[in-house]
Structure formats: C-alpha cells, structure tokens
Image (cartoon, rainbow, N blue to C red; front, top):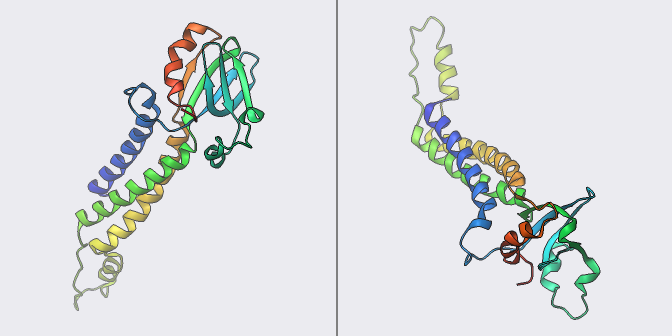
Length: 209
C-alpha cells in the first residue's frame, strides 16, 4: 500500500473513533448543550438489566420508557398512557447505569461511510495517474510485462472511485463497531449520593423535557 493511501486509512480510523468518543463524552459538556433523547441500560442489584428511554428521574427513583423511537412523538397524545409501558426503579435497586443515544452503531456507520468516501477520493486524486509504459518492438518477452502494467494502470479518477468505495466500506465497518460500543457507564451501587451526582445530566437526556 502506498504511503498516502496508508496515511488516509489511519486517519479514517482515528477520526471515526474520535467521533464516537466525542459523542459518548457529551454528558460532560456544557449544560446549555441540547441533548437528544437517550437510551439507558439499568443493571439492578439482582442482576436484571432493564432497557428503555430515560423518561423521569428524581431523588429516589428512575423511570424508563419501553417504546419505539417513532412512538416518542406521540407521548403528548391524550389516548396514550406512557406509564403502561414504563419500569420504575428505586435508587437503592440500581447497581449501574449506562447511557447512549439510540442506534449508535447506525450513526457511527453513516459517519464512517461519509468520511471514508471523502478520504478515499482525496487519496486517489493525490496519487495521480499511474504511468503507462510504451510498447517496445525489441522486447524479448513480447511486451508481456508492459501489457500487464498498462492493464492495471489507473487514472486519478479511477483511483478516487476505487479508494472511495473501499474506504467507505472500511469506514462504515469501523464506525458501526465503535459507535455501538460507545457509551457512558456509571456505577451507582444503590447509593443515593452517587445517583444525585448524575441526576442533572440524566434530566437533560429525558425524552420529555
């Protein structure tokens, strides 16, 4: 692999991972930042794991909503009672809590594909056209090697298309894996003081503000 192509691949992987890290650390950003609704996995002291949208939080309990993302827009409808689809957990029951946006793998994959295509196109044009050898009538091998070289020679545009497609696939795979793993985990251990430290951040990630 040529140096420019290798450098682009390394840069692609690093930036894709960086995007996931930035997203997973958003809970520690400025309080004025607007958060999207977040999905939580709550592990109880009994070992049971409850998953759902962050719906309500107070000093003594956490409520998660079990609903499809498309249903979140209908929470204010009169005929929909969200408490029919919730789990209410007392702070003393909560062992740990992890939070991430819904479909983080898909979001990471889309970012990776987009950046991968751009990186591949840039790398392809940066390398330029491959040299095309001239046929020599005195070649003892009958221009076999010349023919092979010219058969695989690519223009900058062809490289851009090929690298863009390859890097797009690579970026999608890396972004999907990293995005799916990117989440924040907090250990509560049933202690209210630990939960209170996290309470403000959770309130900014509720599906209903």
